[in-house]
Image (cartoon, rainbow, N blue to C red; front, side):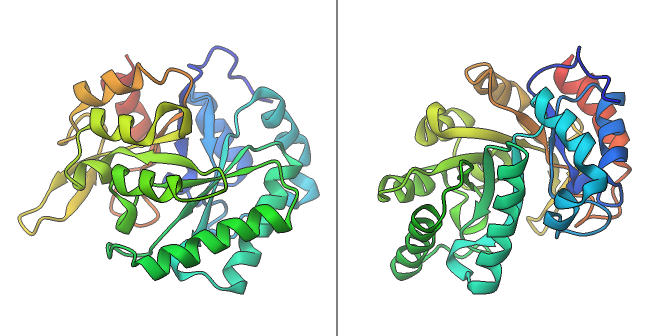
Length: 266
């Protein structure tokens, strides 16, 4: 049973932080910390979550989550600038699951590394977006994350402006900061009407320049600046992206959610 009616309406977490849990266990964790949203990325130690979301055993819980409005986005591994038929078909399977459960957005990327896409690659990326919209009748929409080669909000916005199709954004605040943009600059560039999700994390910089994740409120994230922009986007889900799947040394997600509530939400 979902016991989360008094939860803050905007806060949530990505299941990238608890990849070993199944859907019921992840929901219980969200309820425990009064997190309204769950952004589904990994479940049961796999990133291939479409079959899980289509499995009959999870239908009653997914229906509860749908009715409560707690699933706003599914996170794909689709890279527009490195796509092939296999990855596109995987995106379609995830879209079918999103359609079944009324999940409005699918997160996508451009490049799998920090290399800025070439003009030819962006043309190919536009082709995949065009194909997704023209060949299918899905209600769910694509949301590009500011990440890797598209970390700059200005670059992401310019790409979206070049398209015939509508493209939304997942604003990863850490990545736009790493591109040298302030939270205010990034929010304005992406435009509030196109931002459908916000990814939050905290980090410290190593001498090599690499950012290492830490518990919320214990690192370098300029929370005062970030919070001011969040206040301008009160209806947009704010998601803790605690990447324990990629950084297994991190403490359990429960510790991060506790720190998030104490240091960021209070």
